[in-house]
Amino acid sequence: MERFIVLGLLLNGVQMGLTSTYLTDWNMVGSRLTQPTCVDIPQNLTLCHGIGYTQMRLPNLLGHDTMIEVAQQAGPWVPLFNLKCHPDTQLFLCSLFSPVCLDRPIYPCRSLCEAVRQGCERRMNIYGYPWPDMVRCDQFPLDNDMCIAVQSPIDGEPAPCVACNQPDTYENMIDNFCRADFVIKTRVRKLRNEELRFKKAKVFKMKEGIVTKADLKKPVFEHPNMSKCCGELIGKLDARGRVLVMGIKKKNSLFPTLIIPWVNSNKVIRKARKTMKKFDCSNPKVFSSTMITTSKIPVQVGMKKKTRRRRPGHRRGRKEVPNVRQSASVSCAGCNQPKTLENLVDKYCTAEYVIKTRIQRIKNDKMKCKRSRIVKLKEGSSAREELVTPTFTHPNMTECCGNMLETMEDRKKRVVIMGDKSETDLKTSLVVPWGTNKKLIKRMIRVAKKKGCSSR
Image 1 (cartoon, rainbow, N blue to C red):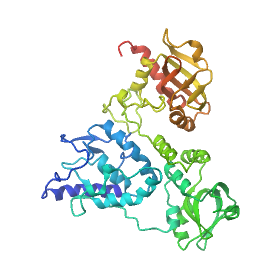
Image 2 (image 1 turned 45 degrees about the vertical axis):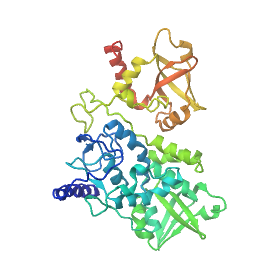
Image 3 (image 1 turned 90 degrees about the horizontal axis):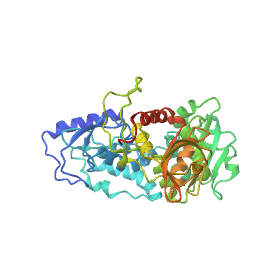
Image 4 (image 1 turned 180 degrees about the horizontal axis):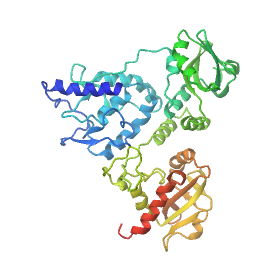
């Protein structure tokens, strides 16, 4: 509902602007004298896709004049949006990165910027990210001008209301995990007389000297608004009533900061749980790199597939296709490559070898694989013996490909690897999980063999 309100606000602003002047004297950072055009917001622009309107203005209000540049610059902001540190974070960011396509730009109000900054800056600073100058709030117009104002003011809800209405995003779970004095998995016993009682808990984290095992044996949370705030959440739990609970201890009392249902089929919870086992919250750089790696936006927009059965919501015609070679990530050992038919065929044709194998382990920036099957081997290049049980090296192999390995659904860890050989080591240009991309990989091989690679 909020999104439609925002869209209505923007459209009303255009009517108001008929009697006012353009905001040409207000110099936005990075602005360029380029004739604006309207383009569709692509699905892979995760930050702003589904915001409430389908077309955006290009160049945007930060001066980005290509979709590749927009996606690259918007990518690092996805973790901030997923933290849900302020309900208007997406509205503020998308008003800059993908402004609604009107005959004149509509800027966010200074109050909107300050509200989002007040809600998010402290948590950004914890992990080594200061508020960037490119979105400095004093650059934006005051509320008496035509601009986008705050839509969801925070009224300072009591602790249980915040805890029981937390988003179940990976970033929010890890952020709360690092700030919590205790983290437990438990079952709800009863909610009565403004007390939320739990059964025996399994402890995931307990700060020594602050929380004791006795505190968490059968924890109890008390608050005057407990029934009102958490009643709806408790009513939606399954028969076992399992929940993930995080919180802090103040003056011998436990206060919840996050309570979400524990569902085994929830991939986000499982992924967060794996991270919690080995995560070092004392190192902000570890947190920052983890957030950006797991929330990275792919830059490319794929071509329409020429198949008889179209995917639901798939439209006819061509979409804007950026140059894949420019947009693909080449600094991450090939594990973050765009999974499009065009890119796979391109990598297949330029690779000296293509193999199907199983990953045994990734450690010390080396990826060791089990026995492989050779799909393609260029004459005079890599020796066949080296590809039987290959080991690949890369300066960022553990950081870049470790996350892919953890999130693979295929227990056998099957992958297709393409690459070439340097003087001594085998290099990877593309690593694609086999299980979720089986049909795409087979089609890629058929296309490459049918059309040939000599013309590429």
